[in-house]
Structure formats: structure tokens, C-alpha cells
Length: 164
Image (cartoon, rainbow, N blue to C red; front, side):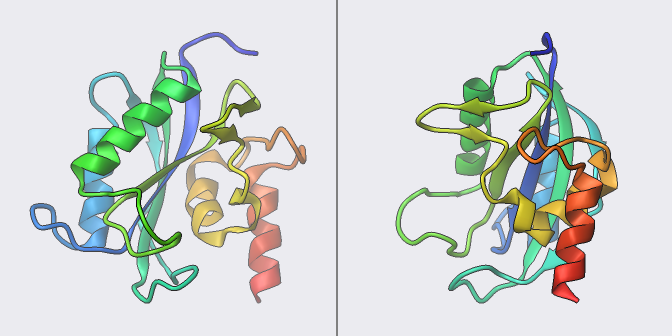
């Protein structure tokens, strides 16, 4: 396991307008800026990309990814991310995959694997999600999934090939 500061690949998504911030792409941009303050430093950011919804939500998403550097361990970073989501109006109740103002997920980290009752890294479903892999490929193409051993670039190419 590497030593702090840790690097994390974090996925961002929004498909609901925020009263103060505006449309979903602006929500994602504001969340990226918020991740570059305090205990985390953004060292790479992807473009903000549109994507179709997963599950019952009907609204299109704005998605992006960032690489952040921090001394926080995975549970502490997760708590910080949940706090940012709450600040943007996110409520973790009700139906999965519903419309949301902001969703922040830890996808990978420089420490390899992590698992406890609240969090699993790598993110369990990222390998099949183009809306995570396309932005991640912009900034972390060479990062490796510690489970499959494949790079983010390779995983992205697989998902895009399956979609075509």
C-alpha cells in the first residue's frame, strides 16, 4: 500500500438543476471546484459529458471525473463526499438510481483495494459504466483496476465497443 497523500479517482454526476448553481453541468463544475478546497486538491479534471440515465430516471446526466490528492483515508473521504452531496441537496433515501442533484463516487485509489461495511474500492460497477469510464479515461487512462489488472483505457475501450 502506498503512503499518504493518497490519490483517488472520483466520479461526479448530476441530472437535477440546483437552485443556486443552475443546470447539471454547472452543478458538476461547482462540485469539482468544491473538491479543490480544504482537505482535497484536484490534480486532474475531465471534461463534463452528457449521458443517458440508468434505471427509472428520465433526465439526462452531466458526468465528469477528477483525480484528487488528500491525506484522508477512504472512509474519511467518503464522509467528506457525502457532506458535499448533502450541501448540494442530495438525500440518500428512497429509490435507487433516481434523479439527483449530485452523486460523488470513489472509483479507484492509489492504495489498491478497500472494503468495509460502507465502501468498496474499486467501485463495484464502474467497469461496465461508460458514463464513469469515458470521463475517467480523459484523466486516468493508465490507472489500473486492482481486481482485473486492466487499465481504465482498456476498460473504456471494451465498454464503448460493446455499446456500438
